[in-house]
Length: 278
Image 1 (cartoon, rainbow, N blue to C red):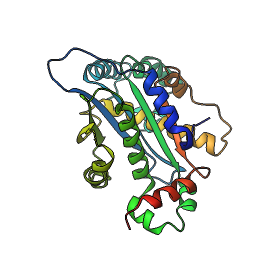
Image 2 (cartoon, rainbow, N blue to C red):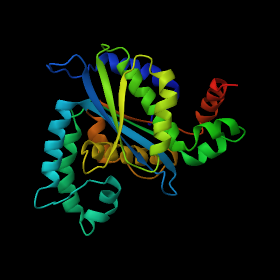
Image 3 (spheres, rainbow, N blue to C red):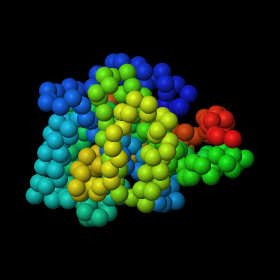
């Protein structure tokens, strides 16, 4: 079952206490981690809009990139950029692939997402029809929040800050997004909202890049898509089992997907409405 927002704080505190961040020896005062975000659903008529991030340190991401790019570049695969939607639907670079070839890639590629190559991953989704119903009567809130995707981004940044808040103050995070249509909205969120919600200054830089240049964005793409599919399956009672690719990364205990839907959105909006300036 996809966890919902009401027990999130307890889950986060428990998980953060149990799973210490990886450490390594460096000659600098600040230990910098890198968080990579990607979206799913906002450009299409999808039942769910969402986003996801993976976070790890630079050493982990180096090992991840070497392994990930190495598998994609094998002659039998010869894939330049992994796009989860294309892979699942046999589009783009995966056009013409049969199930055996896709399974062969999955067996080589997806285990690279597991620790020690990554530390923590989070997916967050909003069920679009539930959003549309719950936002009625909250015109001021809607104008401030924009679209469901930005709510997911804001919540994921909060989660990232919460994870790092009990850790040593020299643990900071550089944030990377794909250079997408929401660049201006994300930048505005960073410049305005973040000043109030990151008093320790844990998130130190906002960056935009492409999946070709920043390979870890492909990991976030994977998790965003898998979270989207699972939220869709649970919310609409789709007659299909949980995807094996999601089961694989969940089994490591460092990944989870959360959602806002008709059960928790009304209370969430009521609470957010009270936080708005007069």
